[in-house]
Length: 140
Image 1: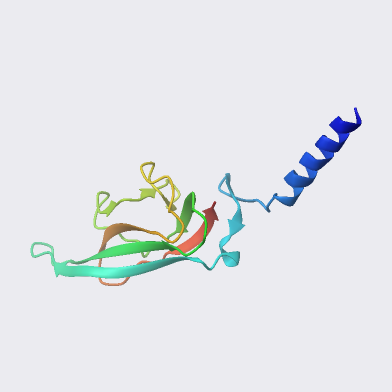
Image 2: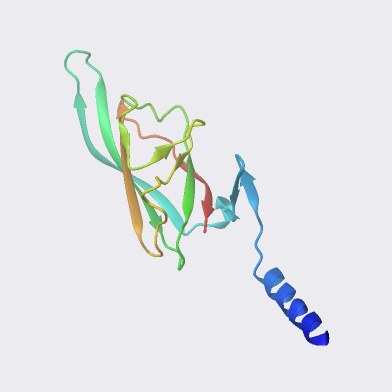
């Protein structure tokens, strides 16, 4: 019986020492608020711009790279957007999932971003101004 109590005590100690703070973002549990995680970054790169002759509108294509500088895999990421993500049309964003609330997250075929690796997605915006993107949460 003493052995059982000692074993349970050790297991409880291990569980408590490996626990982490959880926050909730739109009912998704995330292990760290982004303010505490500067090792995951976003960068936008202009691929090209053009003017559509019939409408006279200018469009710009961007690649966005998510860089994981951590020593562990990122299981998911939640990227906030605003009105500046003014897509040309609904098919003008790829390699990322746009949730109904506008938040961007990894597609199912990309289950994680490995330690030290990058993941790139893209979109075409109306105009020449880059979209405001910010990391809301990262899940490990």
